[in-house]
Amino acid sequence: MEITNFKGAIFDLDGTLFDSMGIWKDVDVAFFNRRGLEMPEDYQECIKDMHFKTMAIYTKERFNLPDDINSIMDEWCELCFEEYEKKIPLKKGVLEYLCYLKEIGIKLAFATANTTELSEVCLKNNNIFHLFDACAYLHETTSEKCKPDVYLLACERLNLSPADCIVFEDILPGIKGAKLGGFTVCGVYDNFSKNDTDEIKEISDYYIKSFEELI
Image (tube, rainbow, N blue to C red):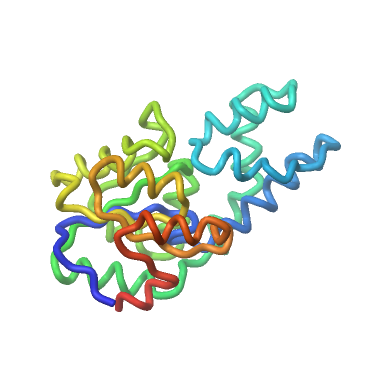
């Protein structure tokens, strides 16, 4: 499949470029285990489009934890830093597709709910950080992934309009948010969003199971 007619491409990271969503389930389970709690079945679904600080606030309030917000965020980072620094791989075809886009003059940005530290260390470990012209972090906005703000911020930093950009995203709230911003959207399969696959396909302009389909 070939996708054409865009000047900029904006990529989510976790679950889209990084094969990393399984790590976060392990982190959440370990976090609750440390407190003698069992992770509720709906927890990851409830937090999946939140930025880091909002997740920490939600977790503290829902479970009445004595921890302060910053210590919760620091603990999450500590639990997964080594994975992001050394182990988390790119999904198949990602490197080749990003290099192809750069070769044909497409501007690249990423838009993520993850932290600056974890995002950059994983991008650098996989040798793709230098390929991006701009970045946008959800914590720089006042909204969640279900709103277009983080994608609009990335687009602005590319000096392009939403009509000129395509967003690659794996989660349904993010896809809805990008569509609200007027972007063309390519849904990307990830196992942790498989229950939303039918709706993702319906909303997205394009859908891929792997970036290998675009090379």
